[in-house]
Image (tube, rainbow, N blue to C red; front, side, top):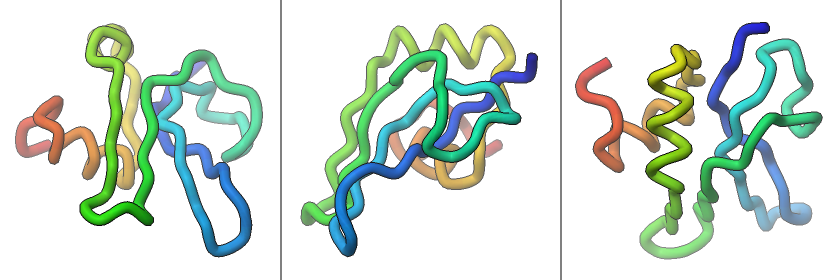
Length: 83
């Protein structure tokens, strides 16, 4: 099983709210996940990001791949350096 860290969309129409989750790479975007790693609310100004640092570091240490949108968030929060 390949684990991916990516965003899962929640919220209503025109009011998106995302969860950063660790999931099987073959699972659907809003489908089954292994663990919730944090939240991202782009509607706030500035965008509100809350992450569980220990959980994120745990999955990164296990070799989880990261989607491009999740990579941008993690890079901005200081978890990834220039990757």
